[in-house]
View 1: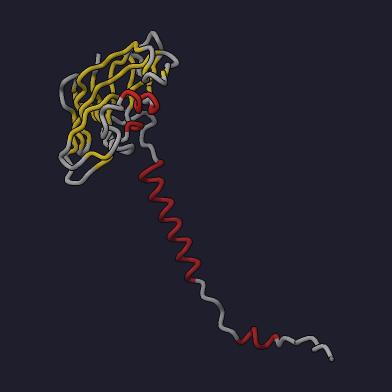
View 2: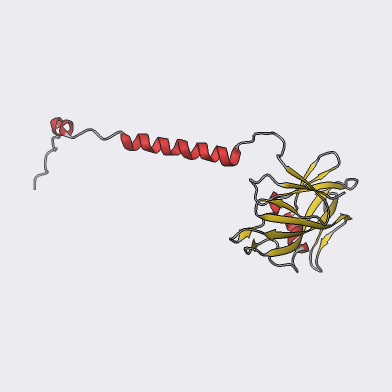
Length: 188
C-alpha cells in the first residue's frame, strides 16, 4: 500500500475569499462601551463622597418616604448585650441597637426590602451597617420583614446595628433600595 503524498494548498484560493467584515467587531466594542458607561452611571458613580440623603425632619413615630416605601420607626433600644434563641446567642463587638420599623410598600408591584441598604449614625456622624445574622434571629417571629413586600402591603420588623458600647444612635437613613437617596429619621 502506498501512502498518499502531501497535499498542496493553493495560496491563490485563500486570496480569492472575500475579506471578513469588520462591523461585527466594531458593534461588539460599542455595545460593551455602552454597558460599561451605564453600569458606571447607575451603580458605581458618586456625585458626592458623602451619602446623599433626603432630610424629611421625621422622627420616631412619624412616617417618612423614600421612593415607594414609607418608613415609620416606632422604637429604638440600644445597649442590648446579645440576641438569639435557646441554641445560639450572638454577641456584638460593642452593643446592639435594635430599631423597630414599619415598612409600607406604596408601589403597584411587590418590592423587596433590603436591610443591608439601611444605615444608622451616631451623634458624630459615624455610620453603622446592619448585622444581618442578628436580624435573622430577632425577626424569626416576623416572617416577611426581610422578604418581598406585596404591593400596598406593610410589614413590621427590627433592624439590628452593632455599635460601640459608649455610642448611641442619633439617626437612621432608610432606603427603598441600595441606589435610592434615602430618608433620614432622627431617633434621639
